[in-house]
Length: 120
Image 1 (tube, rainbow, N blue to C red):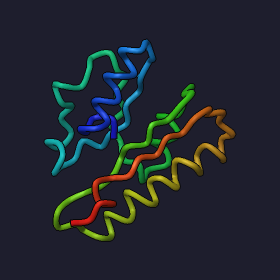
Image 2 (tube, rainbow, N blue to C red):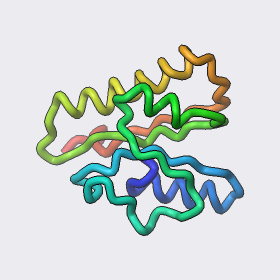
Image 3 (cartoon, rainbow, N blue to C red):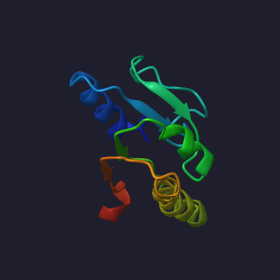
């Protein structure tokens, strides 16, 4: 979710503080034009195009990573509830499963909620 609104601002802050940043994002609508990396995303990031529901994507994205800011989420005003569940819940579970299965030493994981927690 590093190419979304919160994610891209988080990326900018981390870069300004001297961190190397890798972004994993699916770049799908309604947030993005399908598979088009937004111009506002810094050229200084390593970009991984992929879906958090795919464990292989997590495996490649987490190589040599010290910390994770997990901001990926499916949201829409008329959501597909199955997709909502699988992206937001299964995608997050995949993150933790890959870390455990590969014994990765990630020092910090920050998981954010989507705007859906506020209701309508």
